[in-house]
Image (cartoon, rainbow, N blue to C red; front, top):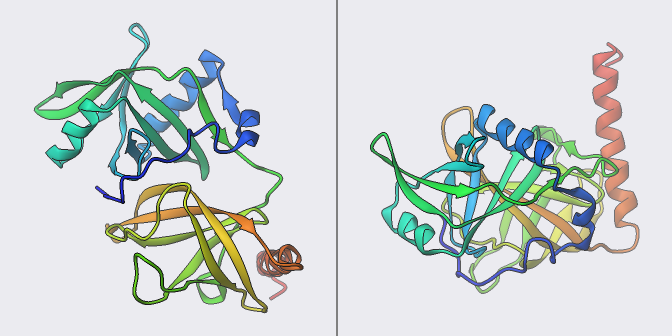
Length: 257
């Protein structure tokens, strides 16, 4: 479980008007996406009342007859009590590297073979945030941009992180599960260092915090952020980096390198 400052975030749909293009309201499509989250055992980050406080969970079942979902509980009883009393859970997940988010209301605590679980009505809508116009590059470990957060209120020292993927619209980093630096919808000044240069002074807004399990079994947190401000020429520099890495990968596949 991650405990932030417990400050409220903006409503998930009001925060980004462009998300209207990605809202899924068709009942058949909505059920299909939720079923995929179950089949792929996707990790979900459930934010209690849409605030920074959250816990990792997963969808366990979809009852077609009752139109309800079964959500796994937290191993932390304090989180289960908070979820039980919450007005809603704001849930973030990834499905084939595409962001999915939805809200669950009217949670009822139930017993699931001796484990805590929650049953809730199906959401009325779901955001399937597939921005195909912003090509996202998974960065190579040996040739990655670096993100530097200067010292701030929550940290005495600068924080340097490898950028794990990047696009013209934003980037993502991976941090330890216990890292409490980032909060949903919060803005962060930072410096983005591209391998080819230059160093860009930017501002980022956190869009999602997703739990992930690495191949070695260690639990980490993927922080997805959008660019709020970029300096002049910043977008072109990012696109040049993406183009170079993509071109090198294609050359290797074709045996040219």
